Image (cartoon, rainbow, N blue to C red; front, side, top):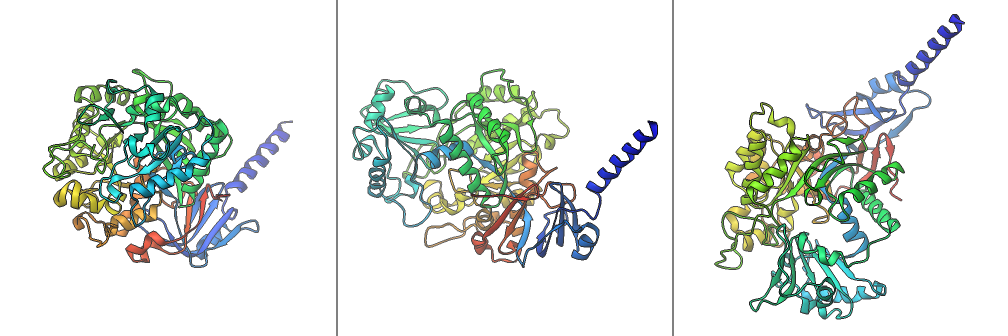
Amino acid sequence: MKFAQKLLSTLLMTQCALTFAKGNADTIFYGGPIVTVNAKNEEVQALAVQNGKIVAVGTKDAVTQEWQSSGTKLVDLQGQTLMPGFVEPHVHIMVTAVFEGLGLNLSNFTLPYDTKETLISKMKAHLKNIPQGGWLFGFGVDPSRTTPFMAELTADDLDQVSKEVPIFIVNQSGHIGYVNHKAIELAGITDKTPNPKGGGIYVKDAKGKLTGKLVEPPSYLPFMAKMPNPTEAELFGAIQGTMKKMASTGVTTASDMSVGGNFGVDKEVAIYKAIFAKNASPIRVRGYLFSETLPAGYNAIKPNEGDDKLRFVGIKYITDGSTQGLTAALNQPYTYPKDSKWTGALNYKDADIYASMKSFFDQGWQISSHSNGDKAIDQALNSYAKLLTGNSKPQERRLRIEHFTVNSESQVKKAVKLGVIPSFTIGHVNYWGAAFNNHIIGSERAARIDPAGDFKRLGGKFTLHSDSPVSNVGPLNYVSEEVTRLWQLPPQKVLGPTQAVSVDDAIRAITIDAAYQIFADNIVGSLEVGKQADLVVLEKNPRKTPPAEIRNIKVNGTWIDGKQVSLK
């Protein structure tokens, strides 16, 4: 009996050794440049995958001789480039799914700009899709990219679309909304209704009458409460569609920065868990719980709860609004309209946001602060400095500031000292650069938006993102935008050339540095032995492509755990 047990044990050990031994790779990639984004930024000839992990990188001869077996699948890149799957550190997956998948998408990132007339025409055409008792819900109107400049919708404008169907349109920034009179009636909002807490505003004209403009998400809630909710099947389908669209751009990991912002944190966490339980997500997700939806003392979800596919890592605060929407909190007034004294407004008092942040920071959560304006950045940095008092290794907490749009050199220095990692909506340069420079904040402040160059020179990390649905997901697009810093509107100009970085630095901002920012650099972000085989196959090598053309490189395949993602 003892001999039989010993024999069985030996056989099992032998089987395990064979399973993970050299000469038994599942897949070997070769035949094109393999950009590792490791510490030495090496390019290699071959990469082997076994059981979803990278087991070898190096020369083709060495990798195939040591890892190829009769059952190994050989993938000849045929000159294409293999890179780490892209890490999108700041999107709103569920918001994008609702806005773009279930509503009317009015976003326009091409030229020419829309006018009020073209927007109204698009909404009228969409009326036929609205069921009895439904709302016309849309997203993507952007006065800063409308002709004439800053042509904002009013309730009267939307009444031209319909006086019977309630209409709710969200601005491209996400921080402003527009409603018609029918929606105002159904929501029960009147000229005398006080503004909601949390920075929301029901905008009124000089006579005290509601204009139909809403500022900041708290003002949306009475309208959203009256809108019919999507079915579970509709929502699941929209979320999966959004995830697949992201995967099609080479994204293999994304951070949802507002879990709870649509349907409450408990429901949205449950939706995510259900999607991943069914293996229905083509990408990994890191979740940041939306602070506005969390009661004091919330601890139903623990910091870092989850696994390598779905993990909840942070708490997200929104301290101000949108720069292009003129609601970001600035230290000096906007330059639009002429002689303006308006500086925007903070959403929190200093003491209140610090107390809330500390309660979650002490639990072990990563803290993220949406701060577009320099006044909001000051508030975030001051709060972070207090949180980190006495901490000899502040970098370990990886505190985040989202956008970091209007800023000063002293703020960059303070951020680097505190180990704060900003994530830039780099589309601010491309899509809104001309508006910032020519109208909204003036050339001096506009030249400093998204200060990647300063962070690089001071030894800090930074990442690049879309803030989807604010701009479209497309990591290769971010690289072109960051390296060239060209604005879109003719005549094109370079906005803040000293803030540009190299192609390699921009690549790190969508791979390993983005993975580091979300505490995932131990498993993704570079092609190194022991990491998950999350890969993207590109038509061309971005390191050998003119920077302005990198955005046009085709993504020809996305792989998670060594398996190609189906986008059907």
